Amino acid sequence: MLKLATLFHLNLMYSAIPAARRAEVIARCYHRVLDLAEGGVPVAVEASGLTLQMIAALDPRWVERLRGLLRSGHAEYVACGYSQIIGPLAPAGVNARNLDLGRRAARDLLGVEPELWLVNEMAWSGGLAALYRDAGARAVIMEWNNAWHAHPEWDGRWRWHWQRAQGPNHPDGAEVPVIWVDTFDFQKMQRLCSGDITRARELSAAGEASDESWRDLLFLWSSDLRTRLTGDRWADVAPRASLPRLAPLDDDGAPSQPSPATDGDLVLRGKQAELRLKPRRGLAGRAITFKPWGGGQAAGAELVDGDLRVRKEWLVDACAPMVTLRGVMDLPARRAAEIHPVHLTVVPGVFDAGSLGFAVRNGGRAREVFRFRDGPVHHGEAYSTLITAKGGLGATDGELLIGDDRHRLVLRHDPAVSALVPTVRFVPGRDGRYFLRVRWSAQEIDETFVAGQAPWHVAWVLSVTAENRGLADE
Image (cartoon, rainbow, N blue to C red; front, side, top):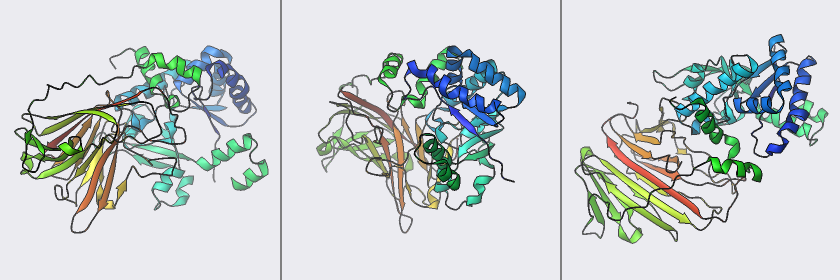
């Protein structure tokens, strides 16, 4: 027999709620949820630890009501962490601490140890399974619709049955049971509550730092701070955030001076790496060659300046097979535009097409390995004229690996300088050939984008290192 449940998502950090109206939200909405539970309706209440703390400070009676309902079994608490963080975009250490502090907030304020967890923003990666397991999760709640869209081979009837989400094929991996929610159903419920549709129509369609320091950091990681924040909320948050700026580039700091080549390129050489630059294209990289791989060209890194004010610095390590690019771009204002400061194209033939793929950490401790044998990949494909990219990679430790079973390129960006989002484009060809490019994005556009007139600063530090190790090796 099919069993349905009612889950209410409580979020006082929601960007459109002014801080001055939070008490009103508790009185007019959150108490009404508990009224349902006291009236005999089975209710599950989900809230972050941060929202629970805000409610406790503004309306302690609500917390006491919920504690009583939990003790009597008339309600169930569903956790999500201390802050609503997009897990695949945050480092594993941040995610682990977020889950732990959320668990402790529920224990201290509600007297429960949460076993059921809602996946924040419905954003999942395999590396999160072990973190939820370590937090004591008996199951997680995840959206069905987008997962099914990404896997058309799935049987649609699976939505009515719990499944298991697997972690990476790694000793650190894990499995965690998944309970599905339906996006269309809760969107219809929202439209019903706002009067957009009638009830009849709806029914017919049916660490080392202190805990306080970590709480401050997790507050700033909150996904609700990222879009259309009210002016008073931004005025409160801005002084708490410190945006890093790359130190001025040193014109005299290069370890070696470029030498001209016969074809007009400039060449930087180390013992194990060589970089060819195109003077007529603003010193864009033409080719990177690594000697441990037999001296064949491995990749081309391109930076197209256009009319923008860009400064960059190329470094070739004197001993190691590593090339580093540091760049700064100062724009007169934040405007609606895509900003892709670096593209790196892998030369066909460098890797074995049969085992070629990429590996990345998306919020978990272990790398997730993806092979290209299943067909094309296009993370940065535009979704519409308003949304410039369908997705990207978290690369939450700043690393993306490209390679096969014998060797690999380690592509590192420094998230402390700029939280770039790498995207992979792979198109298979004939006779083992392929097109493979990695692009780093510093800005995309969607319907929530807000332009600004203040000067806009973009910086990046990116390195490419050759390793004689397989893609899946640690």
